[in-house]
Image (cartoon, rainbow, N blue to C red; front, side, top):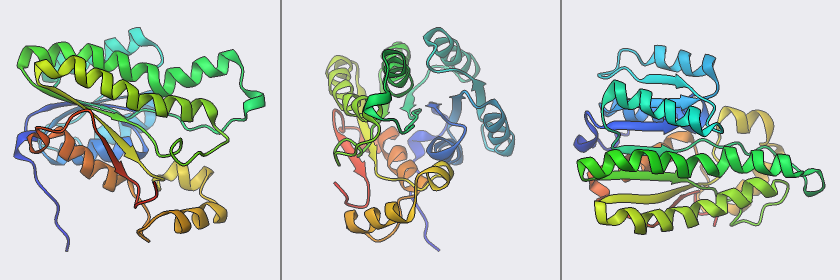
Length: 254
């Protein structure tokens, strides 16, 4: 049986995860809770988030779920504060929440553009801005912004999403410079095509599987736990001198 790393530095550390109710986010919640971290997570899906929190209630620290519309910045800040009040100063932020809804150029309106940027990019900045105050006070922190290989692969059919995800890497580099003097690290975790329930239900067709087989160097499918294991490393003290970098977990596609 394969065993994976345990990170003592994550024990009792307060971790905030956005978009934590389903998919990659739910796996992040599970994996960080298993490390003994104090996990708070935000998501608009109240039913899934509540069910996940209940399922993990026996963890060393029962995760806290706060139903939150992350596109409403005031609501985002209230959600972050609820986690802070419950667990203490936030030491790790995983900016995971996103929506890769497919859309055509000709169907994109100013309103849908703003909505896509709000769900895929805007909240990452404001969450980082908020938790940076905790990290400055405690003298250290790790922020992990989630990107995507989609724009690197020149994928079409979702221009707002790919634009936002490309911008995430610029955001990471900017914040890494601004926050570095306070020992706050900022990195981008860049997933490949991850086989979440949503992806399998909506997007992974036979043609898509053929693209994966041609594109990846490794034959195995990328699963949520592969992303979570990289996130654990980036959140831990083991990655103490890693900042302003892109960590791609895609089976060797890009």
